[in-house]
Amino acid sequence: MVAVVSDYLLHPFYPQFFEARFGVTNPKMVGYYFAAICFMVMLAFPFWAYVSKRVAELRILVYTQLVAGILALYCFYTTSLQVFWIASLTMVCFKGSYLLVYPFILRIIKPEAHTRTIGILSVVVHLGGILGAVIGGLVVDLVNPAYIFLVMAAGDFIQMGMSIYLLKSPRFNIELPTPDGDDDTPKNSNSLVPKGFVLKIGLITLVLYFGDFIIRPFFARYWEAISGTGSQLVSGFMYAIPGFVAVFALWWSRKHASDQGNDYQRIAIALVLGMAGLFLQVTPWVPVVVIGRILYGWAIFQGMVRFDALLFQLSNPESYAVDYSKIHFFQNLGVLLASFSVGIVVDTQGLQMPFWIALAGFGVSLVAFVLFFIYRPQSTVHSIHRGKL
Image (cartoon, rainbow, N blue to C red):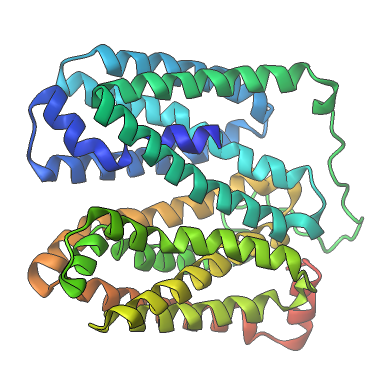
């Protein structure tokens, strides 16, 4: 939570920051900077994942968050735009190591708890993003956007301190789950795309994340256009509906826990519901758009959580960080492509077109998922459900 809040503090306020600190008002600068951040995370996280095969994750975090905090302080003090780009992007490289916590947590818990834990972590990301935006907004309103970097530095140093505490605690000596001894369990560590499932999930989620992120940047403008209201508060609430739905979906799944053997069918159903939600959001009627937003929030939460659960089901505990870093690379590539293309799409085709593109993307993801994971030889399907593919 601390890491996510620190990460999201400045996301809504980069235009204000660049204007207040460097006098830059060109909106393209913000777009280029976002793309650069995404690109740096794409490169950095796989590196830290490979390092984690030799150095414990918490030991890595002690040093990386220390460096990230120092660079955040430097970003607060610098008045040079060029130096800020170099320092802040380097900071992102070190800060991105906190993503190692995700596969680390899943490596130290039992496999049957993966889906529930991934759901909890997904909600943490949603709530952290909301809390980060609120704290960032308070800093911008009461002080100055540049002071957000002081809060970022504090978050990095808190993470460093928590990592040191856990390392010194006897609780850090956790026994990892042991393999069941079956010789059919894949050994993934020496292969770029072991058994092909990393590439398959990566390509599917690349398209899925592209579709999800291409509707985000201009959703508030789209809502204002169809509703006729200029209220930023209402627009922000409508934008945040999927986040609220994710919290409800987590509560619902915990109250109605059931057998996880149907994860493949549930992913397919989630993609279909996502397509329905996107279609409803294209309509010009406000109540229908609200319904579509709710349906889409449920679908995207269920789909993304279960895709992550599928990855860890098919991977080995010793390869969790590396395999997840590969999937994360594909997902960030989808976000990067969406960030570069959405402005051109809206400028040439209007505010509705991103929804149609996202709808097509979800359709492609659904077809690919069915071909890759559902229509399989019967013996292979049994192997998948045993986590042996």
